[in-house]
Length: 417
Image: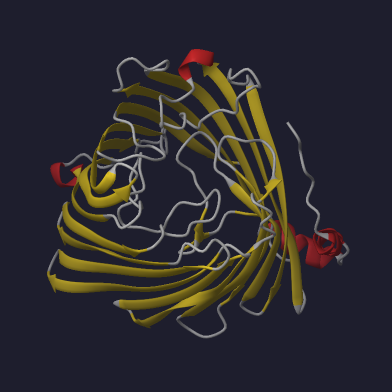
């Protein structure tokens, strides 16, 4: 596989600058440094409920290692530093006939594949990020993992995806956080190399931020432009309303408008939201979405859509798709078992436009049981059991294949500094 080194001259200059400092400045930089190693063991099996296809069952078991080193900043008006992330994925069990998807399934997406379709034994990535700080503003150049409404890196398999580029974050005004950035390359969750965006797309640019109007209400706006493919506006509101002792109502509203420039597809409107009532150890939630227009929601390569209906298997962002969701969470601390949590949700999408017609339907059900060890010996060890059922009714396109799936994720983060 082709490996591409970062092609940002300024990154090298800043890296050099971060070390050409006085002994006192270097000591401050090292004193604020932190490092950890995340061990992530993941098993996934997927039963494709599509009789007569070449691949009806997928199964992968692998071990991931994710090392992160984050330096502090050198002293001075402008502080310099550097972050490093190193990732290694090792196949424990799988084979050529168990990693490819059924018709329309798109594969499991957990390990890179050889030219003959068999999974690799291991894969890795090394990312370096130079950073600078002035007052309460920071600039990061290099490997990035943004979590913003217009772009979110994916971490739903063994190793997380990454991007290359620059991101400026400013927090000079209390309650206001601003972002501006450009992404030029991406690395998918099941790849070990960075690459240019497809279809001759040079970059993705973003600008926006969020403002805490008061402790209960936060408003946000972001703009994104995916080169000559689309431009996108996002507006969001999050409100927390205390109702009584131990009772709270959270409202999360999100709206996207995507305009396609060169493709001629047109405009997309996407409104979605979630209302969550917290009552002690219980959470009851209801979500909705309304999709309209001549296209689908714009999402850049490698990113998850910022949708309340983003689920374990599917994204529910097909053309003109409306959807609703019911969700329940329980924290077993209410029964005297701290560290144990449960979640189940059901999402139903309908009125989907596809080649199969304009009344397509699909639904997904997820159930999660998570336990994080609390005692001193195994403290921080996390066991995550996940069950997924997805059904596509009169829908064609990516992912439109019935599946039953189980995942087991065991993770532990070991502090190094």
